[in-house]
Length: 189
Ligand SMILES: Cc1cc2nc3c(=O)[nH]c(=O)nc-3n(C[C@H](O)[C@H](O)[C@H](O)COP(=O)(O)O)c2cc1C
Image 1 (tube, rainbow, N blue to C red):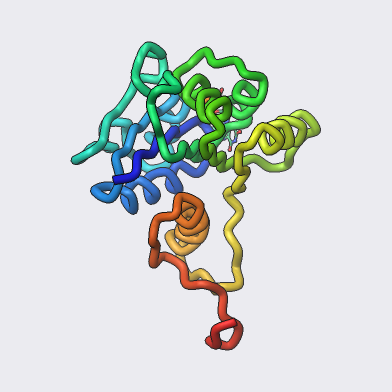
Image 2: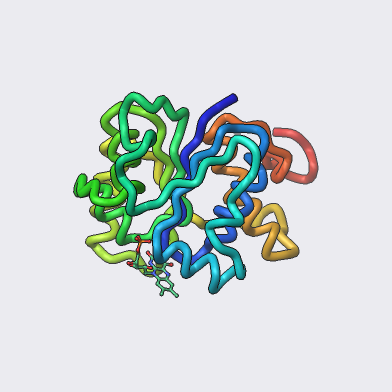
């Protein structure tokens, strides 16, 4: 079973995290950390709390408690996804702040050269944001913006969410049937 860290921070778009969790639950060992603001967004946008991220092979960690397994390089996670990723958290990861568990776990992924996927949601982007995103890319992270495409003709909000979650699952090397590969006129490329 693969082992993933799922970090939820205070950007809009927590539906992406909830859907990703639902798609991975039972299929991978999951370590979930929710920032304080992430918790507020969960409540505001979905009426959920961190406690809803539960199940077999799921461990929830407190963001304020850094002294835990995933804070160490000895914890061999296959990947970490920060989704949605606030510009605040991204800036702190890019600067190597490592104050909270999310920041430290992300710092560990970078130093151990393991897969760190960040899913930012902000518009417009300032020079500070763009510099931080470039710094993360250069440090080895994968920047996967919460930016759904429309060529698959989405009909619902869920379709838009699935577009982004499918891209994340592809990057995690997890089989997904949320989104078929693009095929013009229904024909395979
Ligand atoms: C309603 C609301 C929506 C927000 N949406 C975003 C957003 O989409 N993107 C972003 O980068 N920050 C957003 N923020 C700002 C972050 O929540 C704020 O910078 C916070 O300090 C981030 O904390 P965290 O990174 O520890 O979760 C939002 C804040 C609020 C209250």
